[in-house]
Each structure stands twice: as structure tokens, then as C-alpha cells.
Amino acid sequence: MMPANLTPQYFEAERRFKSATTPEEKIQALETILAVMPKHKGKDHLQADLRRKIARITEEAEIKFATSRKNFNVRKEGAG
Image (cartoon, rainbow, N blue to C red):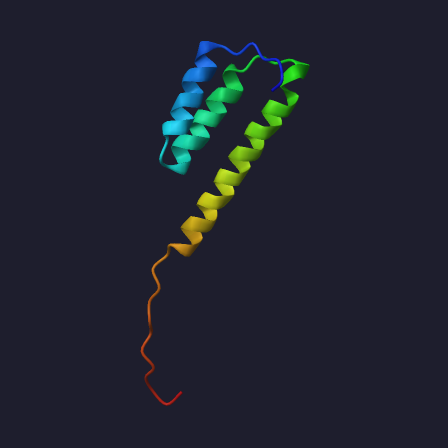
């Protein structure tokens, strides 16, 4: 693991991420982690990983939303 001087706020946000159940809660926790993480060159890979997680969770939530729509059947009628 890389050297990191992470704050207690970071660990609190990480705990909230691990206990989150909805994609919105997870994204909010990851954004909090990014906000409270100290900015220096030793954290570039960690920041990239967090941004990648946010993108993946957002994409999965959009796919889940698109596929969760209710299907409906239209009965065939008429001369067509």
C-alpha cells in the first residue's frame, strides 16, 4: 500500500461507504472521501481508484434503472 496520512474524517466516510446499501449513499460517501482526502502526489492512484468506483457505481445504477422498468403487453386487435 502507498504511504498515506489519512484523516479520521476519511475513515468515517470509508465506513459509511462500506455500510451503504443504495448507489446514491455509496456515491455520496465516495465523494466525501475525495473531499476530505489530503491532496498530494502520493494519493494520485487512490484518487483515480475512487473516481473509477464512482463511475462504475453510477453506470451500474443507470443500467439497473433502465432494466427495471415494467414491461407491458399490448393486446393485438384490429385488422393489422
